[in-house]
Length: 208
Image (cartoon, rainbow, N blue to C red):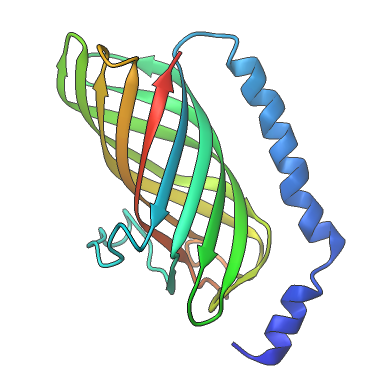
């Protein structure tokens, strides 16, 4: 990355930095209204390359897009609301706030706000136990910046992809254990599309 690009990043305009904040408060209001209903999930997911590997295989396009950079740490908190379900799966509407950090090459940090639809396909569904696959393509996302460490985008607007597995155990405080991969890019819709991967995120969600 050139010195000029780093300078542009540090001198990013106020308009670009305000968009993600405004977007987040908007989502927070919508999420608060959604939380008044039943069938919700609140979750926290994290990744640290000192604990989890960066070399986990990733599905090819179109399931997961290519990325120029893998983060070293991440933390994501979010809320999901169940829209519909049957014996085979379920569909959720969700929103999350994520934080990313790189520690090597060019250390940097970034935040992202996303909204998305997520589908679940049950592998096992019995009373009190659910094992499922989850997938969420192209969730609209606002980034706090266009340049992050060694990668960059044409605009701070990108898409979030998620894919992984989950286990729900009703007898353990209605907790779900989730392991997944996340990806952020603009899908080559614009000239610059470096992309960012979270190699393997692990977390818990609570049903209420």
